[in-house]
Length: 155
Ligand SMILES: [Zn+2]
Image 1 (spheres, rainbow, N blue to C red):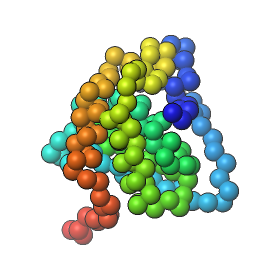
Image 2: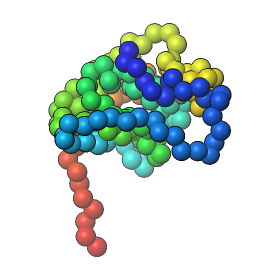
Image 3: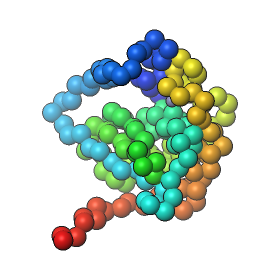
């Protein structure tokens, strides 16, 4: 699986609250794109924190295996999905394909959750591999689609 920066941080040696430079990427004059990868229907359901957290750990590596130029993948605070920041232009179809592949990798994942030890993770007890797999399976069964941006209506 691809290298993940945060898994190489010794979480027992930092002192919060703080600001830390977590990555720097040189861009050859290109564009950076941000994608909304949604697993749960907003305001109807939400992923339990342990499932979301384990998915974050697994997708951090598996998504990078299928998509070059990933800058960051972070869970949404509302726990309905993830934000993906990637060196573009990539396009929704390619992101969708990589996301589906990564979700299939999650389903097939055996053994330890990567980066989930006391030293490597900021909340190592809060993991649920079975829950992560269940949400991956649910999304794959429902079928991922490209969602256009629907703007709020003017009031
Ligand atoms: Zn973690």
